[in-house]
Image (cartoon, rainbow, N blue to C red; front, top):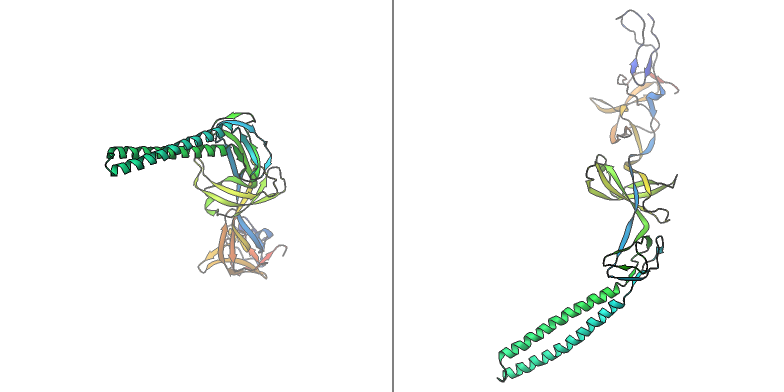
Length: 361
């Protein structure tokens, strides 16, 4: 009886092909077992991370929606959509003639009340002196005192009205609170607007934000300040660096995703609100590590090990396991050196001490 060639297949393991009567004892091969190149891997150090893909639209982090705090007519509107404004620049000026008149009228009422308060104080003082000499009753004194207190209350009320009028007069001009760009302006010069009417929106484009949904199965891996590489529609071949700034405490209703907010510096001013972006959020990022396919990891009574090709034989090499990257089917290992040849194919019948040869080595 002759023994045919013996060869390992990476998918099926060890297969012995023999010819002879059915049920006959098969002899052991004389030469080494041959391993295909796909059955082994050389260990290399590399940077590995689990990647979570995200997508969303860009939004300016800082924005200001300006509304009218007075009911008046717009007499000056020097900015258009797309204009760049600096902090303190005039955005809207209203007709303030009626507002200024209201301030003047209320101040005049205060002057009149001041005179009445002064007179009431004099009357109370006189009635108090007369009462001490028995020339005036207590009722007269109490009436004078009540009149004085009433006038003082009216004076405080008018003073508050003056403060409100002066505040409204100050709202006759609206100025930019920060450097930005006009993104909306639904009103026109000469238009009369009501109180709380929307006037314009100012956005700061220096920092943008992506509101992305991350599956709940991946959210435990996400941490604040984790780096993100983002690709923005319209900028082919270029990526923008971002980082996780906020994580929602709850999943979006009706979905299995949690909102994650990623900030991007836009110092060059290239990005605009509404641009669509995709990115890769790297988690479990490890630098300069050795990682092997999960199939390379073996277990016996002595612990965890791999089979290393050393010379022309397999040797048991004990290892310790670290981070697992399930999306890449890799496991971090320590106990092996860079450049060593490890059996990484799922060949459960292989044992340490077996004489082997690797095609091409």
